Image (cartoon, rainbow, N blue to C red; front, side, top):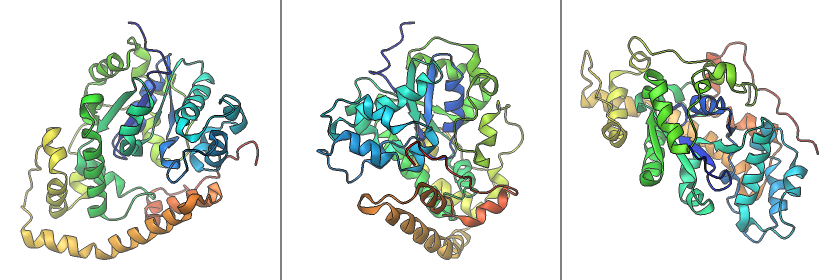
Length: 348
């Protein structure tokens, strides 16, 4: 197979948080020719920046984010790869330089990034690159919602997380004709068949290493958060009833199915068979009971967003800690774990 030119066809993995994007990234990174950065979040850091701003200045700005800090790159090396007069309307040059530099550390020619929220920027990605390879991982929204409730960086509200899953999928399928989609459930039950399709779309030959990423992929190139532990291991074939059936009440299962009706239908997820159907009254009561969680989560999300308003850039550690306390009670699910210290960039 003739591989595409890396600069013309960078790889972007997107999807709802907790949908399997990290696992797919690890499996792709096990391939001898592919390396994707972990949540570099390039596009998320361009909001409000004037397009006439020198691109090197934006790199300096971006270097103060937690996303850049975890990449472990020297911003000066990135700046040195940019044309002297480059402006921010040429953002892709900086994105390419960072992805290329990181992939080069592992002697990989194909590069890309995994950032779930880049799903909101697929229109820009398609304009910025000649032939981007965009891969969308989707997961049963009931499972994704239940998993998000266990994340310190996500709301503690089932309602808000279900709506997040719905909106993410809707943003992605608007570009469905220009990307490759797969279900996490299929990746787990038929990894070889699913990865064969992914690699064909990307334009790379098959390599058995993608089925053993625990052995062949870098495993220490992302933040040491406890919720990534599972993705570092080779997954087994799921058995037994899905965990969300125990984690969610019948009322919330039905509410999520209603909110995420498009995802349920498009990706062929059947309605749950419940031992006892949730009445309309029970569903209404469940929504009302979440009022405090919704308000608390929204206030913490607003506080975090304001830290980055007007191109202000807090200390990376402070910003990360604010994000990882959107749902502070979730930390109780990870005994012995705490927020790690961000590695400081070379100029700090």
